Image 1 (tube, rainbow, N blue to C red):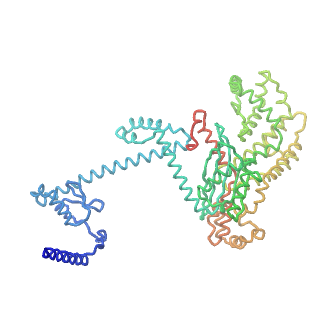
Image 2 (cartoon, rainbow, N blue to C red; image 1 turned 180 degrees about the vertical axis):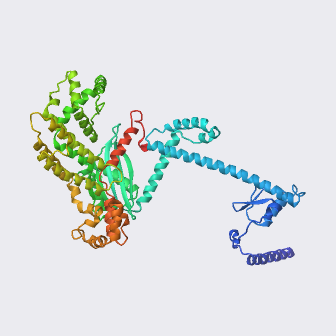
Image 3 (cartoon, rainbow, N blue to C red; image 1 turned 30 degrees about the vertical axis):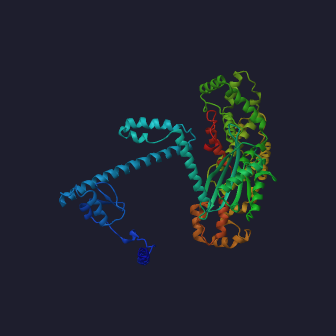
Length: 600
């Protein structure tokens, strides 16, 4: 009994010693070999000896297509001897080389086929994105994708029928187009967020208008300037307002949008609105709410709020108080255009008289430029309009009255001047200092016209000059019209007083070499002196102009660069919002009223 127990104890003790020795010789945490650092390379002779080739840094068997994990000759030889030695043992070296080359050519052709299929698939997806972008830009329905695809396939059948499958692979279904547009929108938003992180100053333009389904659409545009003084002007958001549109509601949407874009409130410089009470209210308007928010965020800069220059220019035109003239003209135009028979007969009548114009345009109150076109056309066709209305039995006493004709001629000329200025203020990427210069020039013109009108000098009023030459009895009321011009000039000064307060800021950007240094802010005076005494920068200013010159300001003038960035970032008008709303009218039609706001 004791003997087996002794043997068992000896066996256990010997096993423990062996375990200790093994543990000492081969520790459990061995250093892992890094094969990538051993600089192993594929050798050409392995192609014929073991039927292997290198693909993307890995050895691949030409016979079965399997790859070996570690690039070692031993692994390749073991794979070949284990799986393929019996099949190729009777081939000599030349036959092996020939077979290896054949297998390599076959492998390359298969790889090329897969690459071609992959590239064709990528091209089809890219084409789908391109067409989705074009459909979105043109504000067409997403179902237009199917129509475009059918057209492409029909063209392909006639021009290149062998490539029909490539066109069939381009997915342009309604759901695909909607998905592509959403992906493009997300990508653009990500790019804008990335750009926004580099802004040193930015401004917002906010406008609210109701669409065809009576949903208020709040459009928010951003104009930002980065450290290189490059300007970015983009749509920040288009938000539907299904409930009320108070100043608090507008602020909540604008604030949410600014926070989503991760824009710092202290870099907000300007806010341009459409002048509605909900926007400009002193206590609860959008402007007041944003100023409160900037104070909460401890923003050091002051928010500059503007009423859209184009809106104010259109409102100034109402200071003439000549609605009675426009109402008489509108009634005559509506009589001719409202009924189809009258309209057709009037066009035939003009054709028979061989007049320069063949029709009359309509006037719409919200389309400011249409008033000038209607007035100009009616003045040129005043005789023909009276003859046609006489033939229809309508009273034309007012239309033939000399005083009325003089008023129509004056209103036609002054409206034409206002429309010319309006067009100069429109457009994308407009610098506010240039827009202020346009308004300033127009105010100077008004002063000149008032002086000339009192002297009966009608050089800049061609319609008035025509009427003065045709007057039979009464004299041309030049003094009355001079008073009208004076009223218009006074209204311009009143409405653009906030822009006049920023005159020095605009001049710093528009004409930095002509600014009075002594009247400039103290933090800019030293840099202004350096700038005005630099002949190279003066020559560059003359070459590139005021808008582009700011980008050439050296880094040694940081205060001037910041001042230029703040002015460049300001919106002068809500033209972009009006343009965007006009495009949404095409999207929201009676046939597409159910379009979701997310896809707008």
